Image (tube, rainbow, N blue to C red; front, side):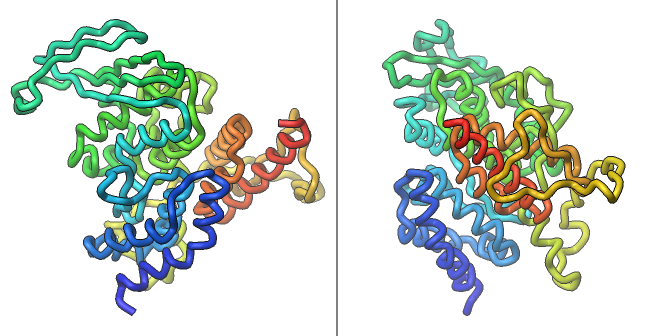
Length: 374
């Protein structure tokens, strides 16, 4: 088979998993249609096809995200695309796709996001009234002056308007927190600044809507980690991070877990490895805590049993602290939003040790939530 046929075959084998994920996520995308759109994307992009073959795990993960979030790959809709990025295939979602996900979740009825420049006439009238924004859409960007920020105006389910103003400083800080921008100063922030600025504005605004939905939150989590758009830098001001993640009780910002391309690279023979200058360095692992005496090994989870809620399981010796924090936060979100299936799907591409630990914690949390009647 050709490279294209092999890549399409990888997706075709996902049909049963895709259909099941559509059911559990309550979305309405059709496998055959999405397979067609994915095939067209790879047929028109040789590099995408090459990356899909070299990192099939990321291709499967990206295609599963289509089922989970319910955003079609139909290029005419412009919601989401399969793109090669940093050695893996990711599902890149446009700001229109993020709005669509929020509407599907019932968080909003509609949304407008606009960039504002220094020479525009802009009058902010508060969070419950539409602002006045006047400019000539045919002016060149240079004529509109310096970029000063964006506003997101959402129509809420109860008919009210919610307006969130986001400064240029906040959007630039979001860009600086992107792993892809921070390491290589390239990617969508260079090629599509306006679209990325709108996406960052929506990420901030959505946390101030009275209602939110799990699909949009999970989509943002995917983009922040696998998509390289995340807030992994300790250099970003805490206030900006809180504006984006939307809560003061979040865990301390940590670097994302190893991505799927790093996992597959570790399993490939040495002869098939990419040149050293193209490969990303393996994430630095935290020093493990002192080992417990051999006579007291870590208790193994027994089906049907969970650890008491006030006595969390001790951290596995082989896992760094940042992984344990990441899993604890994932369990908390899954419990709050009732999205256990989506959380398990999310960790399916993690390295084996982290994946097994995460699945164990998710199963325990799900059982505990069920036993408490949640």
